[in-house]
Length: 103
Image (cartoon, rainbow, N blue to C red; front, top):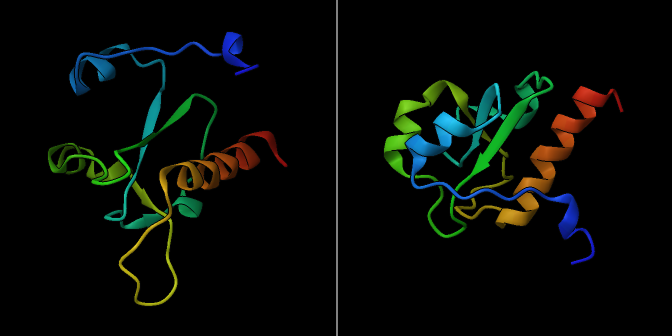
């Protein structure tokens, strides 16, 4: 990838390690189980967005412990499917950037 040198990937032992070391001041967890939509959040500089595995999402214990931070992308109709992880990340990230940067 021609942008790899601009990234600073990090690996974490587990969720607790991530919470201790993340530089994000607030976390928003994207899940189909969220009560509020990603557009109902007032994003701020320093916020972080977390997505789970594409096949299973975030573990239930993490969702239970962070219930006030759950956001979803509404899906039209009566479908039980969701966007793939890359699409979901792009949708939520660009809304956050739009708000923070005033686009």
